[in-house]
Image (tube, rainbow, N blue to C red; front, side, top):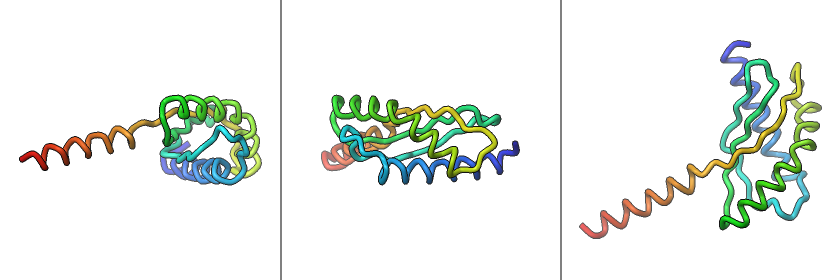
Length: 115
């Protein structure tokens, strides 16, 4: 599969999963979840979904457990809506880059204020 086509498929899967997490997952452990990226393998057998979460460490851990338990439902919905040759195995991965970026921004502001 060409890189352009794979990129299109990743974009489609990202939209579908974002919609599912915001509107159709009813698990109370799933709080505010934002899909930051999706990586499909070239053979469409695996899909890594990078998610950003709000909350403390305990809440993040619970949300990740809830997402892993909902992976089967998400996979079924992706299969019916994405029109892919294969249905990829869904794997949710916590992406802490947003919280790390805000921490760095806060530190830079403090340094600037001290000058």
